[in-house]
Image 1: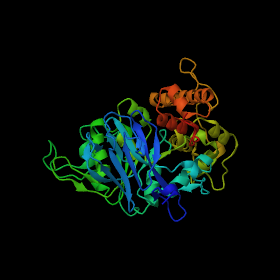
Image 2 (image 1 turned 180 degrees about the vertical axis):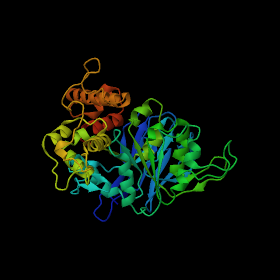
Image 3 (image 1 turned 45 degrees about the vertical axis):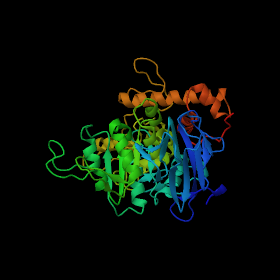
Image 4 (image 1 turned 120 degrees about the horizontal axis):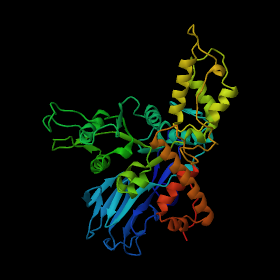
Length: 457
């Protein structure tokens, strides 16, 4: 048990792992942003004596009880008039997992870990699996990965295109207790919407035109191992409640079958979208988001970790430059000062192109200093696309250019908001027209660290 008697969950890779206490967080409703710790049990309702008091008119005086019993999280409806729902299912008593979202009237309440990134010191390692980085930003990422890899905890990995989100998922799997099990990647952006359910959950022969045989979907293929839901933000909205049900119940129902099949799968999801914004726009379910983000990890863009460029270049050029060649000089300065809108993926492609074009006539490799890199402007230089627009480069596709502009806007807006309302997240959230949690996540994303626990008055 943790401080105050709260349940603690060991999500680490051994005895030195930091424990995680649990809390109830109101995600939607009049009390959105309110958090209360879970001790041995907590009641939710309209009565002032409840641990979490909701003013929602559809919430009964004593609506539901969340209790900890032998490491399990048990939810019991206390005879409420409008019911307690987990996903689409109305429950009387059920065991739920960390990240589960309870719906009470118009309010959503999540069971979340109280663990925070600032509680974990940066790792002393400069790599984790296939990931590399000597920068503080990457060593903070490694510290989290070292603690969560050997657990079964669900992870949501955010970051721009090319930052290595899929490498994170693969590296977690290889370091986990499931390393000998299957590792399956399901790309939510590449599957047609009408086939997504079949590809994800499988189908029975004859379930639809073209289903000439039974097919195991991605979840069944990953049974006993890990599934990476890549580009989760692209998942069709009508499929999201079925995914939520699979996560909650650890079972899937193939298309055309009446019976569900139990699965044992760890889920790691990745996205380059702002899923909080997607929720606000009605394109992503809030309960699914909070079920997936038990641990939420944001990969830093390469422009935020210039100290890592030299090491990345050395690793990517291994065996492609003469033995003993040094990664230094003007070419390194050029690579370090570039903004890398495509992140590590763009760096890898840039190096591959330079090596291919720099290969000498006799087939021997060119020295690093002799390679030619055709790059855009340095990261400190404003760029024009027919008109002045700092922070946007015309060298990348529209989608990535838009992401750069949004990033610049968010940083400027948050900076101004912080100056107007120093030390008070709740007042800043009210001024911005955002929930406290939405602003908290925005601050964390923009500032690259957990915001301090500032007052709400």
